[in-house]
Image (cartoon, rainbow, N blue to C red):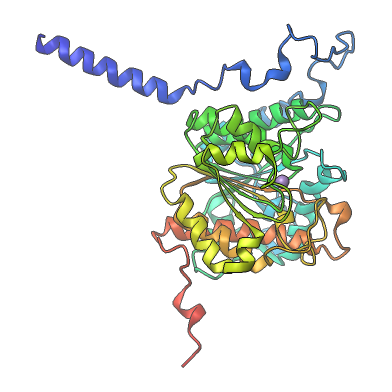
Amino acid sequence: MKLRTAIALAVFALTSQTAAAQQSDTINDSSLTPWNDPSDPTVFRLNKDDPTFPGGWNKRNDKPKLKREPGPIDLQRYYGGTMHNAFPTFFAMPVAFSTEDLKAGQIEVAIVGSTADMNAVPGTRWAPNYLRGFVNSSATYFTARGDGMQERNESGFPMELYTFGSIHELRIADYGNIAMHQSSGERTVEEIRKVVSEILDADAIPITVGGSHDGMYGLFLAAADKFGRHGYCIAHFDSHYDGVSAAYGYYVHNGNGIYEVVNMDLVKGEDVVQVGMTSIGVIRDDFKVLVDKGMRYHYQAEIERDGWDTVTRRVLDDVKDCENLLVTVDIDIIASAHIPGTGGREVDGPTPAQMLQMVRALAIQNNVVLFDVAEYNPMLDSRDGQSALVVTKLMTHFMTGLAARKRGITDPFYLHPQMVDDGR
Ligand SMILES: [Mn+2]
């Protein structure tokens, strides 16, 4: 072969590899959303004469994009002060509406509210907006030293000092809420896939917060569209194993996301680890299907026998070679005395402090590409917002871990020396 031909072939091979990396085969694979198959008689017929069909519920408002340069928008009237004076965005952060806004602001973390609401006890749809108000009242001060993102993030933020890798060091935006379709979990999941993809396309880390756990299939689709089939793994924390094959005939259900993602072959079974289950699983056939495909798991019974610290190390070991890690936390994993505001309460399970350590450790050890805190139901929360406080802390501790990793810290259990020095 002539040298020139060889070079041309090599360049072609490189270019096609790049093209393949940019376009995941999941994007146009209709078998991943089988509920849309028009040739299938079990597909529900919708009323096409309805003037709000098909997109009234999730039609985008283009006004925020008019007459401005792309970038995060700072909504705060005041230079700083108490959070009670702040416009209620997550942590008083600027808002963004598009991939372009996130890119222009070099945003690293975009917090987006999920309003999915398919738990047997409804109410998770109110989670994100309730949390915005709560976050602002629980964190006393904010400071906007100027108009820029960096200034906003540098001070007045509710730090978690454990690592001294403070979340001031991250560029954060509030990406608004993801609409839920009131009659269709499938449509809601499609919208979750779309909005979360906008964040991933900006190479930012989405923190999805609030909604019921059926939303996780939308996260899994978005992650596959970005990182490719088998391109990521999942750490799933939950009192329930969410791997049931029985979902009353529906593809989208808040107890079957793990079963779906493995059986749709988006993620390999061996790339899934489940932690904290207290209930059904081991005796079921669908559990055996997942385990046969390599899924790893740590029941609450194992935690009771061996202790939280030991099991935490096992979990970190399970995912240590994972290139892109998606972490999803159903807050019902935490013992219900600490977290009344969720629809699937279990009395046993870790304390908030133990879960905070876990999410911080994962954020330090792994390249976490998406962090999900699901199943917060403010309608069930105590009046003082006990559960909202735990959800807020899960977010801040995760971001503290990210900040520590950004500083080059690699020990997942790193604690700042001054924080563990007893003063002698
Ligand atoms: Mn769950």
